[in-house]
Image 1 (cartoon, rainbow, N blue to C red):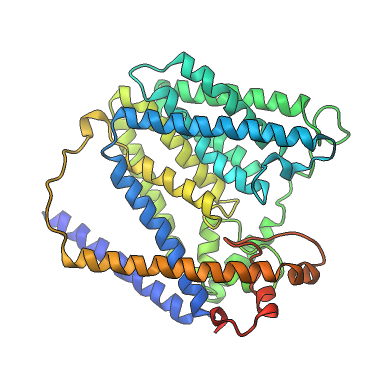
Image 2 (spheres, rainbow, N blue to C red; image 1 turned 30 degrees about the horizontal axis):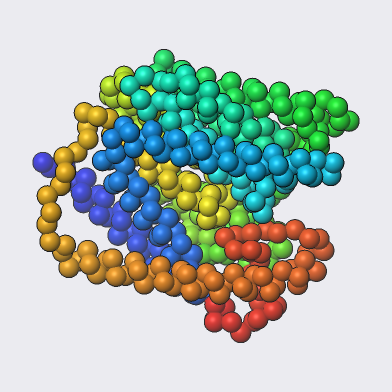
Length: 421
């Protein structure tokens, strides 16, 4: 009893300290309108993760199979659309053509690293894994691997490989089916990269489009993020500050924790890292105590979770909306999953307390502000695109979660906009 009370007090102290740091960061931010917009966006992602977690606790095995089947079908449809697009531009394709429909191929990779392991639920969320379902999933998985190999999406490839290895380490024989299916499709995709590759591969002078051993400018961004975190301790340079620090380059640090440290403060970043480590400890303990028949499904979720977390250390997947939704979906599913023996009983109906009603109303106001201010910022970014191209000297987008992402360019177009007050 004493231990539970101490833990409760500790949790409350951490929540209170985090809340005070967030308020202080908002107060110190150069532009309060943008800071509040960033907070509303991050709060929305957190709420979605919590809703998915609570909902997933009550899913039967059929629900997990339906989720995997839906994602596998979406992967198959996208595979056909991607092949059709690439066949039209084959003679003059570049790496960004291997993520058609996305402004940058990295955004497709951010989505793929979470969706591909989740699609395996269609094979494994059954009393016994289905060979027919595995055969149906193999084709879209191979095409998606091929898209990742040809576009040289290194962070996503690393995330998928590390996720499969972690699942094998944690679950052993129970992870053979998902790891084998993902591995076989990955090898087939690699063979396709070697043989069917308009921009590289065996028939090209340079096998790779770019120097894959380079950091692609990330080391400089990470160094700046650390410098901002220490120079502006404890609250950083302010939300969205990386998109307006006076340097016309990437609008985020391409690292989940370093970006948080630079913009929200080193303390909040360390708390976030501690939360992730605690989550990993919970996953490991649950995996070891779980019945064997439920481990293959949980292995798919762990593969997706490890993949998106690894990818987030080299990309801005928490910033781009679709990538971020895939991330919070994976986080919610892995912490919400319950085996058949652990499914909670239906909760009895009870009156909604006043505090919950007020919290819901406050969240709706934040959502309304997110939509209004987000659209305002989006149109500003569209109007400033040409100006930013001229200032940078080259046509390239550095997006945050809007089109352009550089606040300096937007201020050149409309310096008196209320977002910059």
